[in-house]
Amino acid sequence: MSAHVLIIEDDLRIADWVRIYFERAGYTAEVAHDGQTGLNLARRLAPDLIILDLTLPRLDGVELCRILRQESDVPIIMLTAREAPAQRIIGLESGADDYIVKPFDPREVIARSEAVLRRVQGKVQQLLTSGAISLNETTGAVTVNHVRVDLSQSQMALLATFMRHPNQVLTRDQLISLTFQHEFEGFDRAIDSQVARLRKRISHGGNQPIETVYGAGYRFVVEDE
Image 1: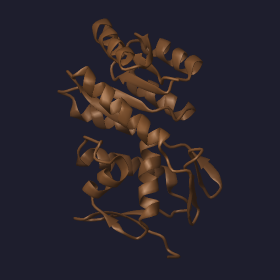
Image 2: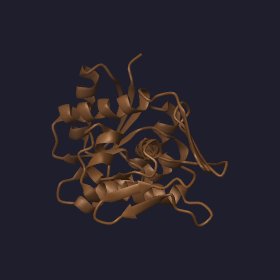
Image 3: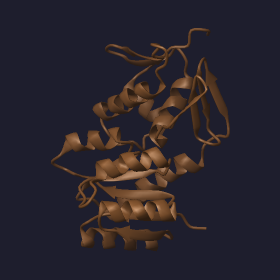
């Protein structure tokens, strides 16, 4: 069965253009032209992937992404304007798994989408545990002190990388390579933002397992190893 893609884009020309490319690539695609309609369709259709414009009428893309991330682990790729790099960071911080800058080649959208779907579908079925933190890669469930924590797909992948390399200093480039297999075309600040969001989610009892090693990168501290 082909993957089902929901495109939420208020520019009718761009939305139709992207939809046609997805359908030519063998996907099933639906389109919404405003945020509220997009939210309703996402809840009704439960798509495999969402392509989400950052600026939308009725409900903007950032708020829509936050709502979707609270309700679902569906992969989200956000479309952002070239002249607004700060908005790309906001998009990632709201829970998007990746972003694409306008104007773009639709073939890039397909390639990025396939990369995100591969990361989701190709997860090793494994339970990772470290102290109070548990990550079930089969179900996508993350718990801290036995309390469920909701993470985006990118945050789960990043946490898995940290948990597989306990007490090891990882540079930003290493995090990108190990987590995204070089398919993440962001920048240092984007990785920093993802780490910052992950930290907020997994801190517990005053303990923060991810520490910054200034001038080097990050380390996932495991006391009992």
